[in-house]
Image 1 (tube, rainbow, N blue to C red):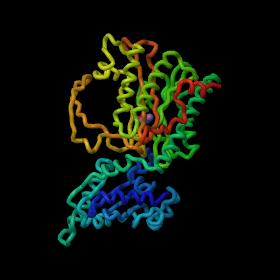
Image 2: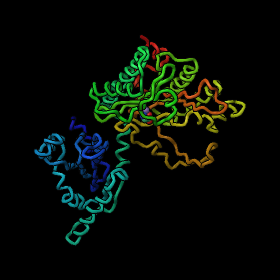
Image 3: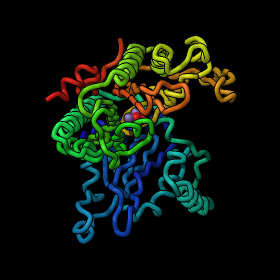
Image 4: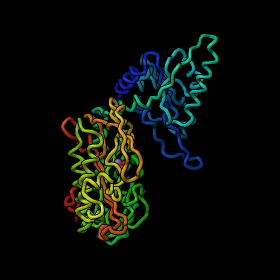
Length: 461
Ligand code: GLY
Ligand code: MN
Ligand code: MN
């Protein structure tokens, strides 16, 4: 735990609250899974970003002068026998570098005092169910004392905007953790590929859960706390279901397997997709579509650099995919027209219906605005040719060094009239994690190959 790094983040945040501002940041709630058993606990990312503390039932209060108060679970030898060690307020001051720490039991009594005399109250809007009513309670309590000189904040403001901007640029320490997370995940993909080919060679009944188990084993073996999201292990036609989860379907010789899985390491996500032939050899049609998706990813990678727009990689991959759909006969040019028509009318949407990337960080779909803040006023509208809806456009975010995003084009061919049968039920996505640099981007997830030849070599023998 690097207490001074968190202290720096808190003071950078405090400087934006206004001298008389105050911010309240709770960590995440625990969620029951069934009787007496909770879902595995995961802290709130904003809270963790500001103090690195992973226990549940904790709150930060940060004032505009940079002072931080933590509320956390009190020491309780009896409960600690059941639930494990608690840091406790007495050790939190030295351990976390906060200015003061109190037991959670004092939260309701202390909060009105901490809000007294502040002009703006900041907290994350729309994230923590019930937080608004707790804030109302503390303000009501404070208001009851105005006759005795108490002074209520006049404004409530959303803290997410400030923290989102801070979290959007990953510092050197965050980048190092993300590189390590991506490296572990890459190793897990390699193992899943090799297991699939080996089990099929041995004539075993391979199921999606076998590959899922291999991923999890590799994540945990290297100290990852948990998968960053539910792993997708999709055999054959299941790959055309975008949010499919690893289940029990057979992994068949001759089919492709799409795995979208990444570990979370010390609070940071990785997010990798590879698509590979279950038996280690691509068929002709599989290879044709695979190479197309890879070419579209390469175009997107080439468009990812400081100064480019967030939408540039998407536009670059759409261009390549759309041309490939025409060339391979997925789209009939005599019906859908030229490349420009396919893009303008979004005819490619039948086979490519998602965006090419998202921010990546503590959250797999990380926070951070997708619009350029200095240009949000530049609004234009256009009629979407496919849906007929009016689309409001604002200039996309300009990429800067230290931003991290995924680059994940794909193609998903559901059987339909006019679609060549050799491509039916093939679903392919290739996803890598990129740190934006001044001159381009660093792909931190290429520990697992993407080239078709390299995948075949990896899976052979
Ligand atoms: N694994 C989630 C995503 O690729 O967006
Ligand atoms: Mn992704
Ligand atoms: Mn993914």
